[in-house]
Each structure stands twice: as C-alpha cells, then as structure tokens.
Image 1 (cartoon, one colour):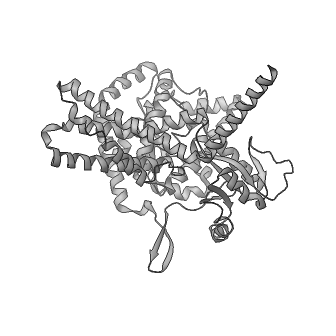
Image 2: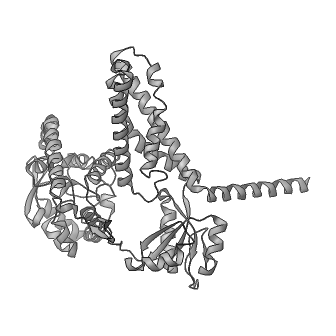
Image 3: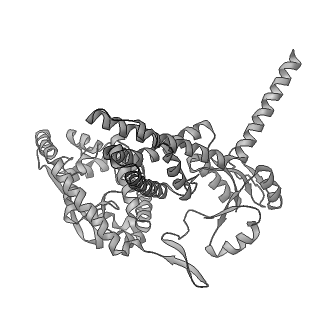
Length: 487
C-alpha cells in the first residue's frame, strides 16, 4: 500500500513538472491564446449589448442577419494580430490602448461600409453597429486587464526570460519583474560571472555563468533576454555576443535612470540609417488638437455642472464662514503666475493654522517636508473633506482650462515656493501647460513623495501624446471613483 502511495506521489510530481515545463516552453503561445479568448469574448459581448440596447429602445429586430456577421470577429482579431497585439509584451499600456482603438475603429468602418454596399442597408441597424463599436472600444481593453489579472493569479502569465548584467542590478530587475507580473516577463535565470558574495536573489531564480547560457536557453526554450547596459553604443557588442542565442534582445538601462529613447525612431535616407528625435511638444498641430479638446470638454463641463456648482456654493457657506471659491497662486507655463480656482475646503486663515500645527507636531512637520501634504490636515472643513475625497473641489478649474491657463491633462501646477524642489527638471515643467489631472493623480497622489511626483511630471513632458492624455483622463475617472490617494 505504501509503495502504491509513493508511486502515485512520484507520478503526480512528474506530471506537475511536465506541466510546468510545457508552460515555460509555450508561455508566449499561452499568453496569445488567453488574449485571443478575451478579445473574442469582449467583441461578442459588445455585439450582444449593442443588439440588446437597440431591442430595448426600439422594439423587435431580426437577429439572424447579425449572427451571420459573427465570422467578422476573426477579421478583427486578425487586425489586432497585424498590429502586434499578441501577446503585446513590452508595448506599454498607452501604446496598447492606442493600437486597440485605432484597429477597432478601422475595422468597424470597413465592416459598416462593406455591409451596406454588399448586403443592403435595410438588413442592419445603424444604431446596433454604432453601439457595438462604442462598447467594443471600452470592453476589449477592459477584458485584457481582467484576463491578465486572472492569469497572474492562476500562475499562467508571463514569458520566461534571462536577465544579463551586473549581478546586483540583474537581481533588482528580476525582483521588480516578479512584483509586477502583469508585465508578462518571468525571470528564470540571471546570467553573470560575478561571485554571489551574499547578493539577495529573487525566489526561484538561478544564477548561471555566461558559459552555460547556450545550454540553458535550449533546455528552457528561452527566446528573450533582458540585457543591462550603460549606453546605447553597447548595442553592436550585445548583438554580437547574444544575437545567435536569443530571438529577442531587450536593452535596459543599469541604475535608476531610463535610456533617453522618448520620441526616437529609426529612419533611413538611402543607404544612411539613423535615429530621429521628435519633440511632440513643438508639434504645433498636436498642440492645436490638445487645445481644441480642452475648449470643448471644459466648456461642456461648465455648462453641465453649473447646477452642482450652485448647490456646493450653498453647502460651503453654511459649513464655515468665508468665500465659496479659493484662488491659489501657482506656476503655469513659462513660469508665469496663474490663479488656480478651487472650491474652498479650508478654514479662513489656514496658513496660520498650518504653521502652528507644524510647530507643535514634529511628525506632521516631517510629513509636510517629504510630501508637501498632511494626513489628517487640521485646516480642512467638514464639507471640504467630502469635496477632497472625491476631488470635487478641483472642478472649478474647468474655468482655468477654458481660459487657457491650464489644460485638462498635464503636470499638476506647483506653488511658487515648491520651485526649488523641481531642481533642473523645472526647465521641462514650464514648457507645458499645467493640468487638472496627470500621471501623479493616477499613480498614488498623496502616497507618493514629491520627488516621485517630479519624475512622473517629467515622464509626461517627454512622452506626451494625445493618446497618453486620453488614457490619463480615463484612469482619473476610475481613481476618483475609488477615492485613491485622495485627501
């Protein structure tokens, strides 16, 4: 009996190891399959919702003709594949969102055009087509987020990779990848000839000398390596050393700073090849688009929210004496002073309250020096706490946006006294119009130190695009509803 139990145990372990090896060898195919499943389900759901809304609003409608369009799902998935969305590892959330939106829009435009030319307009409802398209724009990206989350929890997401570089830097990178598994990279080995010397290593990751790299790549079916470098001119040497071993080589910067690759693309002029740097901040047409969006959305927001503004004005005056609005001096584009408009959330003479509170409370003084924020803040009124919790106090800044002093998205406008905290980064800060929301608002807000806020602002300035603005706006709605980092 004991021999039978032992044999079963050995068999189970053998099957488990075989399953793990299969997942490692075919991890990329596994991720592609999961995303195909997610995209297919979300597109079908978008069609069902579009049909259901049309049925609820306008009554009976024949569904047989729409079922015949189901194979078109394959064409849309094919377009996604052509745009490099499977498995999409390394794209970045904004680029993935951009490709999904453009691909979905192009395919639905083709589908609607071909359907009406070939089948006849009378068989299909414009409302169903339009609603399906709108639902797909939201559901497909959402489905991918949920699928990655579920796959990570099930332990089946991520492509195995080798990390090559200085041992301490490689171990830190591997640890970061393990803490953020949704990125889709699972470090299996660290390649370094340095001695361990007590370096802390991430769980489940082996350290191997470079001489064994070829055999490990073949055994584990590793196709991707992350190579840590100091400069871009190391690329030729990296390709010569590892190009025949790995299908994909990704160069990453050692240390904390990124490679200076924002706005860079490969260009060719005959037999000449080079790198072209595009400064989107100087692209006048893109800036005009940004301003038009600001005018349209801020004007519409001021009109629709005017009844809410009136109600809040009454509540603020009843809660504490003082004005309804608060004008705060901030630094805008070019370093000019702007007066940022907010609903008043603090007691009158709040600066005096703050100074006295910081003198009496050493912990609060340290918190203020690091974050330029306080939790809890003795200056805030009862109504003010509610307004800040849901970021409602920021809504009057729609007027600043409409007037051109601010934008819907951009670095958060800083107070004049905070200018030294930006250091050399202040030069980039003043190149753009500050925003109502930005990367800081969707990345933790008050939980982040001011130094991290500066980094996020600089990332926005250097990587600005209309698609990044759209992503930040959508993320802001989610963050506000969840009250993340508010206070």
